[in-house]
Every structure is written in structure tokens, then in C-alpha cells.
Image (cartoon, rainbow, N blue to C red; front, top):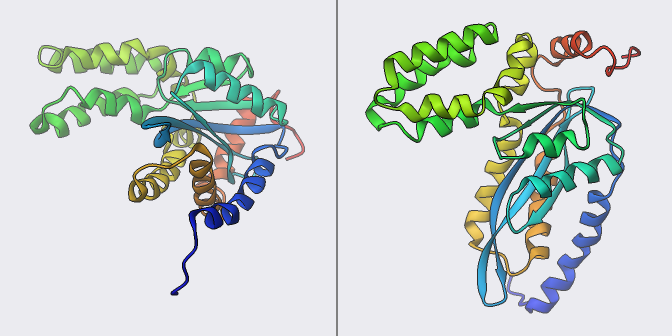
Length: 275
């Protein structure tokens, strides 16, 4: 509009956001979230004379009404199980006493980090992450066939059926892509929990798409800026983007009543009876 502002003036104006971020980041949370999704994205932040990658750790919780909420965002040099353990502890300190299922990627030490805070929580590795990891080994021309061959594994009715499906997959593809079967077996204990649940719960914990949809929006914003001058600048923009995303989360996730009914059956000691 023809008005010029100095960097200092703009910084002072946007610094008002920092107080809101601090209040939001420390707000009390609900005692129970049936599902929490944990994931991280990389942002570039100037540190001295260098631009370094920082991991923005994000937690999204689904409340008892099936509404999603961003519970917090934390910047750290790298994504690691130790830092995730501190994130879980902070969420507990803000009031989260119990979580039924925590969905995350296959980061080493992640389950132990979660169970240190919520020992009764079921830790579920995102199946989509497993599929993507497997597809890295596959030639482009084979991708559709391999993806179709993997479906019987994660769509199996039981763990026993999933084991047989993986063996069948290896009979066809192990000679060409031996690392796929090995990658699934390495994460088998974290993959199989959701096989014990009925379809309404499976649909919710099958993937961390609820948080990845947020990450896609954040990446679009990050991409146009290249890097941030400081961590505070990164936090301000990420928080504003998350706040705008949350405004659209006014309805429960799809088929939530059916999922909640199944949660009450499978977790009778944790779901309150006065629903």
C-alpha cells in the first residue's frame, strides 16, 4: 500500500504473537484422548552464519467427540525418541492422563518414549509409513504390482493371516526385493496392534494422515520462505498456520460414533461410561 516498514518495526508487531504462542503451548488439555498422532517436519532456520535443519515436532489429538486438536509444536535440532519422551511428559503435565492409541512413525525408541508416560497406551506404527519405506526399494515399473501385493498383509483379518500374506509376498518378490520383507519384519510388533481392532478403529489408526494433512499445509508455507531467520520466527509462522488449519476442524472425523463404540468395547477400563 505504499508504506515502508523497517525490519525492527515488523519484528515488534509480530512479537505480539509470541505471547499467544506461549499461552497456547501451555494451555491445559483434556485428561483422555482416544488417539494421538505424533510426527515431525523439517524447517530451515538460520543459526549464526549457517542455515540448519530443525525438526518441528507436532502432536495432534482426537478428543472424545472425534474433533482433532493440535496439542503443541516443539522445535529441536533433530527428531529423536529422547525428545519425543519429553514431549509426552509435557503433554501429561498439561493434563493428558491417558491415551488409548498413539500413532507414529517407525523411529527407533519411539514406543519406549511413549510408554514411559502412558504405559497402557497402544503404540501403532503408521502403515502408510511402512508402505512408503518398502516402496523405496522398488523400481518404478514394479510399483503398482508390489503395492497390490502388500495389501493382503495390512488388510488381513488377523495377525496369523498377515504372516501368511507376508510369506506369500516373499515367495513372489523376495528374490528381487528381499529388503521389503525384512523391513516389515523389523517393525512387525509395532505394525500388528491394529490388526486386533475392527474396521472402524483400523481406519483411524491405519495412517497418520490426520497430521500429515497439516504437515502438507505447513510445507507449502515453508517452501515459499526458504529459511527462517530465527526459531521464534519459525514458531510464529507455524503457529499461525496451525491456528488457521484448526478453524476447519469443526466436525468429528469420519464414522466417529462407530469408532467410539468400538473403543468402549476394547478399552472398557479407560473409556468413561457416561458418554
